[in-house]
Amino acid sequence: QKEVEQDPGPLSVPEGAIVSLNCTYSNSAFQYFMWYRQYSRKGPELLMYTYSSGNKEDGRFTAQVDKSSKYISLFIRDSQPSDSATYLCAMSADNQGGKLIFGQGTELSVKP
Amino acid sequence: EAGVAQSPRYKIIEKRQSVAFWCNPISGHATLYWYQQILGQGPKLLIQFQNNGVVDDSQLPKDRFSAERLKGVDSTLKIQPAKLEDSAVYLCASSSLPGHSYFGPGTRLTVT
Image 1 (cartoon, each protein chain N blue to C red):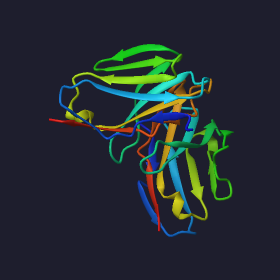
Image 2: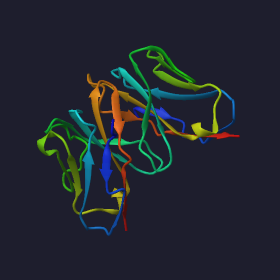
Image 3: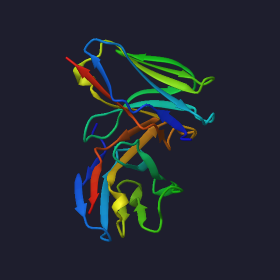
Image 4: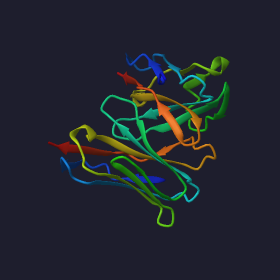
């Protein structure tokens, strides 16, 4: 069993839809939870960062961490074609939040 | 603020040849990581440096991979000899805050 599980998709939604992306994990020592966006042939770009549990909102993006269920989510409101990318969840048990363990990534396509 | 720089962006070599990748992290970032991303997968950590010292190289195939970070700034990752399964994108990341790793554009390696 992988430490971090993520549905690879692909996920296709119409412009303006609410997108929900999820990851589950098995290592209860994870304390840092991140979401990265990766466009084709580019490096991952840090979108959201959460330490421990709770919710975090930044513009159209909301990240949720439920440590009791070992489940994290990223919601994208009013999705745009420019949101089309692969979304990677990443987690760390390291006290400096490094040594990231990534999910497989979910490929998202937002259709105009 | 300039991002993480990597070169070359693309490299094609034959199996059993050697190759080297270069990374220049964000100025002032003490922590530097090399990740390997195979097509369709999330990045996998190879090695972590703190300044010019190795913190974790437990997932680095040391029979063929080596890395160094001289003077605590730039880093090079070398593969010798390369195998077909080394075909991947090699990503460099740097960090100065917990949970905030910033990635470069990566070097896409094809081994034929």
